[in-house]
Image (tube, rainbow over all chains, first blue to last red; front, side):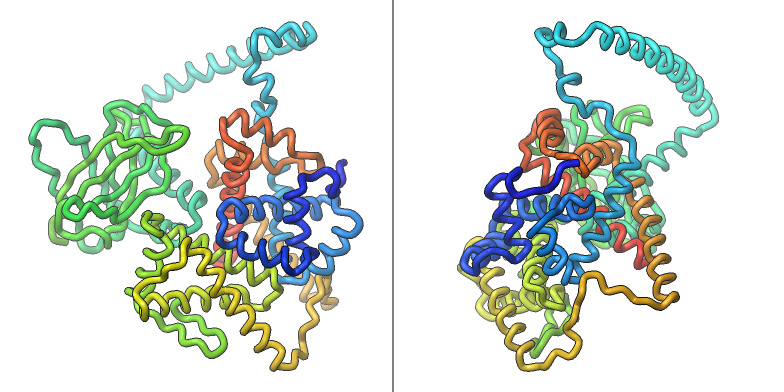
Length: 301
Length: 202
């Protein structure tokens, strides 16, 4: 077990830990006070260092001055004590979760030149495991195909679609705490689904949507010509002013239907009787790229 | 934020004033309220690091004051907006410290390991603990598989040095260590707030 000690850390991390523990001279602490609010990079780094410090305490890896100061200073705040309590449960829960098999980077991205460095029995064992996995996957594939055919016959695909929508709602709830309460409300709301197709060059009139007055949310399903991205985002735009009225979290496409589609739910209260467009963008490694536009017109509720 | 009071402040704000605050914090972008939430989080942490007993209320007081300044003067020249937030927060902190000195604190002993000896208190604590664990499991189940993988790789096995594992993870994802730490923190923070909300609702 490694001890969380000053000598093993970068200077910047040590400085931040001393700041968190109230050990910095006033002048330095004031500078970090300002940066912790005004500087995005410092704020993010500070949070990461604080989490690691708390985790180290929970795991019994703090020693000496830091341990003493942690107990006398850091734990003096109820809010920070809550943080420690959460860390204790969080780390226990994390250790119960299955470890990701691809954690070993060298094995997942090995180059031809590295092959000979491995002992032969490792490769033999790997080959055996792979063979076994292939067999299991093949059996699963056969079973899944059979299940899929059955599902197509008895209309279970619709249930799957419903589950997928519910799952996406659940995921958004966790990934964006700012929208947590809103999503809670959405989950209990009665759904109203609209399927939209991307705008083409042909002059096709926009879909006209009439939403019942008692609905809280409107579910949109944006059909894709091709599912080229692993993640998407949708923005509701007022074409008259160019203003973005609402923006979704990051979502993935669903391909259980005839063509892939992105599903989002928009609070009905945002929709007034006018023209709108849903702007779909796909996520690349660095940014979002425009994918398509889905125009529609709201009727009076 | 619209209803909390601290000290002598008058917190009543109009929706227009609040929207103006959001726009000012966004500083030309459209963060959908995220900048406000982040600013508030940072302010709460700032006041908490100074061991103030009501960090949330002080953060709200800071933002309320900025709201009122925006309302009265129409604009704030200081850039970026969060730097101005710090300036105001510093005043709020000093005032709170002064206020505290004026009032004798009889119950200021806040010990980290305070233990209540009564059996009922122990039972309550155990029940709370149990509830939190159930909520955590529930919230963990809502994570996407890739999010679960990320936090297991990032935070898992905390008894050992994590740095090499994290470097490997960042390399695998093709992102910097900084970006990785932000990603991991977001998931952890979302879980923490999910657990908080879940416990309140039970």
